[in-house]
Length: 463
Ligand code: FCB
Image (cartoon, rainbow, N blue to C red):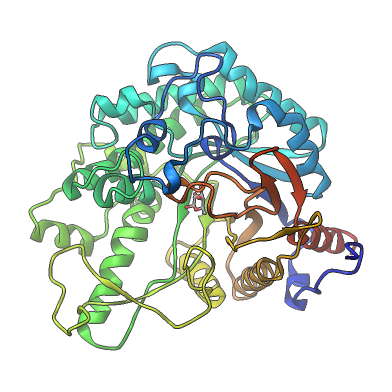
């Protein structure tokens, strides 16, 4: 087949994105690095969780993943070839500070030191995430995020990384998707550490936020160069399935626990009243100590928005009985096409979400730190013809452009993901990459979507 043929056109509204818009690709440490026992790295909760039978598809794990730890320069060359200006990656806590306590591990830190230099050498800005879910196992053994001390441990770890890399890294985000850490990790048990304890998950929310605040405060105080600080939240546009009170309440509860419980304290230094009263009804109190909310509400230079899908919610079960076991609610599908994750494709929910955030939290600059889709790709004769992924990116970039037209201050967009990788409990079965990875040979192949993305960026830069 002719891989030089022009790739699908893009939606004209994308052309309204400004010349200053940032274009990037994103990954995270455990999903790509491998080398889990090298240079002093200790286990994280994901190494442990992957070994629990039945938790991860096919008993997959991140021992080798994309072998990025050994192929980093080659991968950075691919990033540069895409023409992006920014690369979002995360630092593995148990690599830099084995066991989650004590001094820095120079060998582990050295990897990120070389990565940053390699990126800068190729004209790509590093965008660093301090925590993308790989908590050192020892800290989980001591109680994990439900325990207050973990917030202080996180701030100490953050300073080790900041001291070493803040001379070259201009953007620092603390946590990736604390909702996943707290809710999926400690309540639903669908991610590491796999606990199912709702009160513990609420304690985790608070200590994740406190860790963010403590780390941001200390890093900002220590900064000697202009540096931006932020956090990445995953959000959808939660709407009621009908106008009924039960459905409106279900959407409100979901939005409260998934989005506003993070944004309100981060931006306004208070937890949402309705969430506090929902929690009080089930005898849960957020473990706030004096001064915590001031620490959490550190000024945010950027809010990272991770968007994949939106859903509508109902407060009744399939038989029509009210769901009253907080925090339960039920998703009512729109009946849209879905990705390989079974996530409905709802680009207009992206526009609505971004506009909503900009109205509720005015003056907060946003960057899309993740957006993308898994599809069942076929590598055929060196080509992955992923028209479905191109359509997804096109529709979602258009959605971002529309949100900007409606007043949302969105300054950049990072595709998830640079390459196929370890998709958490789905193992290697779900492929989100712009670049295809053959896990037997570690061969990387640009999918058509990668060429499309590169061409869109090139086109916009050439104006
Ligand atoms: C997000 C995660 C990211 C990736 C995508 C598909 O929730 O931050 O690591 O798994 O989903």
